[in-house]
Image 1 (cartoon, rainbow, N blue to C red):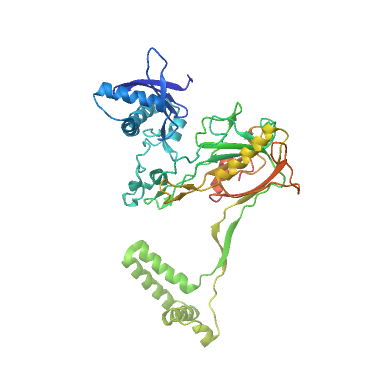
Image 2: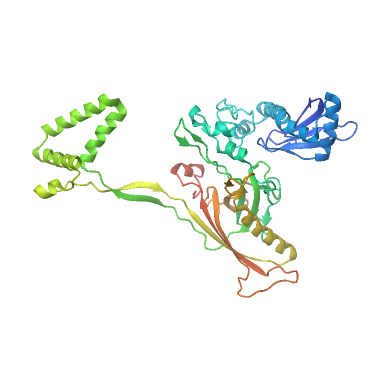
Length: 458
């Protein structure tokens, strides 16, 4: 048992159970006590509210025990349903109590505030319990009238996914990543790491009229495996850094004008919004006084512009006096942009094991970027997304750019990059060339650079 695991023993539905709760990751395993024999693991949950039955044979035995101890006659399917309604509620409460009492402060904050939190955990910084300000059902999630955030994760969970949909790939949290070439050593060679994560939409709050922030992950590899703390990671590929890497930051600016009449009308509208009808009336009165007291030039300009607006004609002053109002043309910021990134790798195998790794890597990206069908086929859910990192001796590279969460928009494979068809005796291609185009999910903001003051940043 890990030093971070705490055991909780108490019955559920008169069945003796034991829980192993990890105070670092929030992961929980549930066992049925079976003295004098070994305990039987029957269920588990990651650092979220997603539970799964791990031993259906054990469940079959338990439903017989349940009927015997509770004088009932429910079926295995009915006990299965009861576990996911009553049982998980009890196990979540026990887990939250253990974490709130024993976990480090930063762990509590992470588990309580991440997009799919551990139910019942409390953020020590705010005192807010996970789920307290977020809706827990699809109906609540789509009702912004309460002022609660619109929880896309709750909607997504209610919709569900097609049975058999893959949500765990090689290199998931706690597992070894796919590495090419298989002799690559990320502890002293510079590499690029692609970590696959399940797409999480941002949460919108109608009270704040805005969206929440998307958390940037920085997955690590410890003892050759993806850190178990990075529970959102569902797959990882590590490759050598290719040639021709670059980035390009851009924002959109455009020309815009605002003449005197528009500025005057703007002051009237602003006064009405800020101070109500009386404020708008005062602004109009002040405007009239200003025009009356000002020079003949200003009086003519303002009068001419109001004539244009009132009569829906253009160029009154140009026609009558050969004048136009200075448009005050200025270059103004209009929008950020999303950065694209392209990578090209040639993958040539030197052994059957390396051929198998290359095939798994190609499948990893192709399957990961594919849309996901809902249970009823009514919806298509967003594909998995990726966190990309340049690493220097196992740590984030200070002299290359960082990435925000990215979507894989295109993935192209050339099966004959040498210009001719060539295979090994087992049918594996001698070499492959893959080309990937990613795009970040959100723009770069000035505050993003605060997280890396000693590096290039984004």
